[in-house]
Structure formats: C-alpha cells, structure tokens
Length: 308
Ligand code: SF4
Image 1 (cartoon, rainbow, N blue to C red):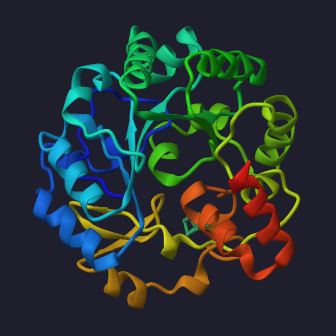
Image 2 (cartoon, rainbow, N blue to C red):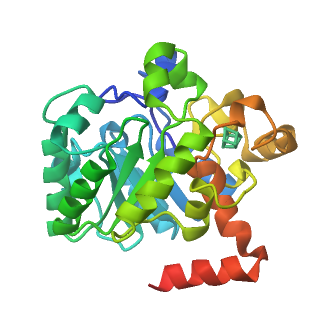
C-alpha cells in the first residue's frame, strides 16, 4: 500500500486518512522516495492509494516506473478525475483501475459528501473500459448497507463491463471512530455483524465477478479463522512504514526491514491486541488467505478460483 500523498478531493465518511494525517495533508512523497520504498520491500503488487492518487502530480510517471519494474499496480481512486487523467496512463494488463463505489447514486454521493461523485466515477469507468483498461471496483459494506442496492449496483457495473468487484467490511477503528463515536456506532460493524452481513452478501452477490478470494470470504463469513498477516501487506507513506498495519499506526519506521524487525507481530490479530478484535480487513487477512496454501484443500480452492 503506497500512499504518495494524503490530500483528497473528497471527504468520505469511512476514510480515516484525511483526518489522521491532517498536519501533513499538503505534503507528498517524491517519485524517488516511492520507488526506493518499493525496491526495498520487493512487493509484487502495489496498491497506489492515499488520499486520492490521481491528484498526485507525477502519478503517470510513478505508475509507469512501477510497471517498468514488472510489478502489478492497483490504482485506488474515487474516480472523479479518472476520465480526465486516463490518456496519461499506459495500457497494461498489469495496471488495474480500482474505483470506489459504495452504492447507487444517492447513497454513494451521501457517503462521499458531495453530489455528482457517482456520475463522475461512472463516466470514468466507462471511459476507462472504452480505452481498454482493466477496471475494478471496491464497495464498502456498512452496518446500514442495503445489500439489494449493492446487487443493483453490481448489475449496473456488469453492464459497464467492469472486470471485478471487491467488497470490504466496515468495522470501527480509531481514526474513524474517535471523530464522532455516536455516528460510528450506526455505521461500523462488530465481528459478528460482519459475519452475518457477509453470509447474506455471499448468497445475494455470489453470481457477480467478486475479487475476494474464497478463503478470505470463508473468513469474512465466520466459517474459519485466519491469522493476521499485515506484515505481508505493509503501508508506506510520508511518515514512513506504518506499524503494525494500514489501520493502526503505533509507530512509523524509516525502512521496511525496521518495520519487520521492530514490530512485535505476535501481539496483533484476532485474540491479540484489543484493537484487532473486530478487524477482518483485506490488508491483514487476504495475504493470510494466500498463505493458506499450507492446506491442500485451500490451495485447490484458490487455484480453481484463479482459473475460473
Ligand atoms: S488484525 Fe487488523 S488491526 Fe490488527 S494488526 Fe492485523 S490488520 Fe491491523
């Protein structure tokens, strides 16, 4: 997870970054700093996020440099500037545009805090598909999310020829909870609530092109346990390497090696640190699902999913 800046053109309900890094929101990493971090950790896949990566002035150059290192790029955007910026990006089957959409127009615009965000994102998706890019979407399921509306959204995205749709659980964590605890209570789910929501989601949305792996989905549905593997999906930004994970920042380290060596990983994950109690986040557990290849049954499940 590479955050070249934290500035954003929106202020969405579920996002902690613009609040957490308010003091440095006007600053950004240089392309050289981003590449040095990537070269140090050797990640095969880079999620370019933030903030809004499309307002990073050198985003096209940075993306090109990462692709030139034969890495995969997952460019996580709110989509508002996607159509305008498309022409600067190379066509590559290793570049995935990942647009955040939390529902149909009224719902998404309310979550994003501004009218017109859904329309702009959809125009960006259509333009990107038209131009031959791979396009994915990311949808956060909140406590109040109506899954029937998400089914309608996914029908629409299928018509737009979106290549895959990711769903993520909204659970409380410090950066979003502290600002308005009463509102957080109505939005964010406990672990049991996530399990119930995702069991329903799996039934209702299973026919669409989901991008969550089947092992991770089993975990989201409460059918199995996984250990946290946040060390395998680290976050780098202006403050350094975030320890222990994308959600919590007990410390920032100057190098990836320091992050690995100076974090007591045994203290985190389900059953560990109290703050991890409701966490089922992609960056902590999708790597664990991939590593679940220890069990032949999981390996087979993941291989079949990859092939189909
Ligand atoms: S369980 Fe979640 S909150 Fe805890 S360290 Fe892992 S990713 Fe972070």
